[in-house]
Image (tube, rainbow, N blue to C red; front, side, top):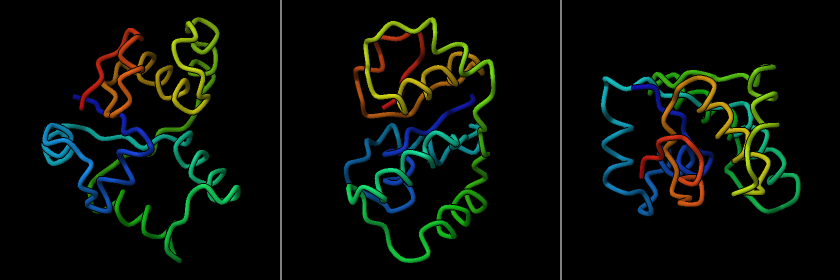
Length: 128
């Protein structure tokens, strides 16, 4: 199955954070799954770092790139159909990054790996 990683899930997975559920770990480690990391997540990380809301170790971008390569995580660009899908989404969730991840999951028929249970209000499959 195709799995889009929410920003927090990606960061927790690559750092071994204990807040991960067993299902999230199994989904991540299942070689039958195709994993994706969205441009929206990198954008979110960069904005939070610039605002001082997120602190990552020096060399954080190389770490992200290395982890993506090591774990065969594919880059997901933000495309026009993803943006257009946003116009149809109800406002169950107001976070623009999460809304883009939902739109991408819908357009590209992906499941979304996220702890955020508010995302289950959308017509996607959320894994946690």
